[in-house]
Image 1 (tube, rainbow, N blue to C red):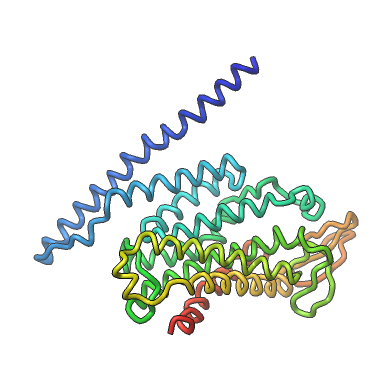
Image 2: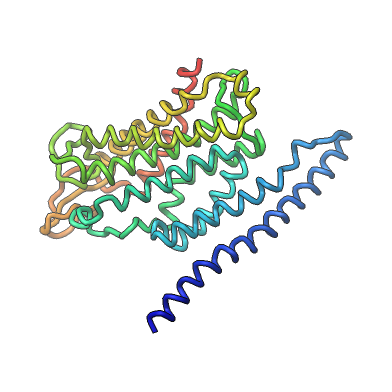
Length: 341
């Protein structure tokens, strides 16, 4: 009986990738066919050929296959639930379609944050009352983490198209601004995740509240440590590094030689991770309730036997994550302009 069950599990692992490929290929070709028809009518109306309007069938295929693979991987690893995987499919499709550098930021955030969530999980169970193995992000969490980046990707799709461009505010201002904004949104989320998931279990002492530097228990909203801030910087740099490598691999060599140096994007990613984590902590310390119950566990709602630590019950954790990603995404391009100029 056990051997039969193992055989069925092994068979499902083989059949699933084949099934996904069988679905993805015709879907991607349908997108490409519609795109060709649209570009044909558009070029006829303008009496000129618009070859740049036709997106390569390879890009359509990758835009379908990669999000499917990520959703399947996330479900298998329990990093997302079904609703989160479905919404993530749509976000991954848009980001891949616009630029491979954008989806590289998503992949870096998704993979590394999932690993960070599982880091020393046995210790987190003692600190979090609603701890879930692997994180299991639902659609609300996926929306709050990737919603701003996807919105900027929509603007990139409408204004720039489906193409990879280097970061150069002098030659490609609008594409550079939008790309750095997308990078900033993911760097913020990754930096904050690294700080909360790694910093909380690596640091030996209690964190301090970012607003007044008073000591607070681990897990308190707005509580930070020097190790946590350093880790948030590294988390943002991981996203920036993925963007940098992808640009080097996908952008034409001649275009890169004529553009500004691309290595500062790694530093910009680190700034986004640190800045986003600080903004998240400030919002958490002031507008998010933190209390400790009779069992010594941090809770986000007042109640019987709960002692108030900090913050007011204005925002929840999802709202804080969304606001911090929006602020970082809109601020980081202005910081990047100073670096590149």
